[in-house]
Image 1 (tube, rainbow, N blue to C red):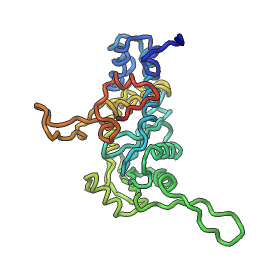
Image 2: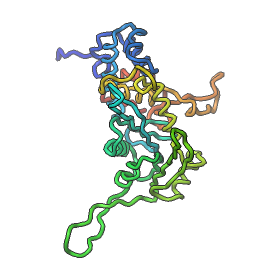
Image 3: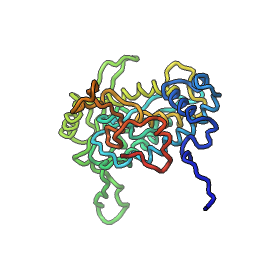
Image 4: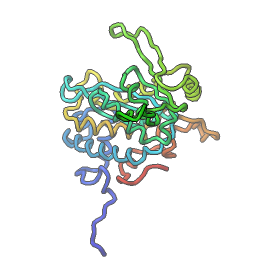
Length: 320
């Protein structure tokens, strides 16, 4: 015998939690339904610092599981957008940038930071690394110029332009947009706080490729409806994003941890009415199969319960 200790909980948020597994599950359920740390502590029967500790550990666990499972994704279009928020005080603005697959509603990548080109680049580069074919998709965004600037660099094919003559510097690396890729900007024009006009602009690619993707998605015209709807869902699930609330994040680590946790629960544990599929043979009164984004994109074949998802050790894949 090696005399080594073994625990099924090691590598999960239950390891050294200093509270029952049911308490950890209840904390995760409450905070991902929009309850603040203080309210969750009252409902579960623990201190708010215990809630914060569980969220930090569970958020790290969710990030590791997402990095392990969200790979080689087969998508033909993505939508990107940012949500405003803050940490500590409203002067310290922190934005949640998101990339979503409009077909399966799967959250491919999320980043948190100031709304700059660096945040956009990190978002698109990490999203690109999770895709099987990053050169064969259509990107739908709003009018934020960083997407237009970075799209050729991230999703284009690099090449070296021919040198003019034999003296001087070599030309900088340029990028070609494949025929299978395109970028569409949906630009809203405002008068005060009211939207007075919405116009679309093909920033890269061809109209033929865009029309092909719109037909596949069932859209009549380009839009960012999937990511905009997810913005509302995120504000409902994440108390740090709720408008006109005292449940904002005091520390950045709590903001980031809860964002990762909400993303994991959304992808693997929450069913979406728009993703349900009709059963070939009804099961009693059940006519539809309820699906999560992870099921719709093909990563799993069942709805994960919170206990099962949190019990998945780091390094062990959830993919079917």
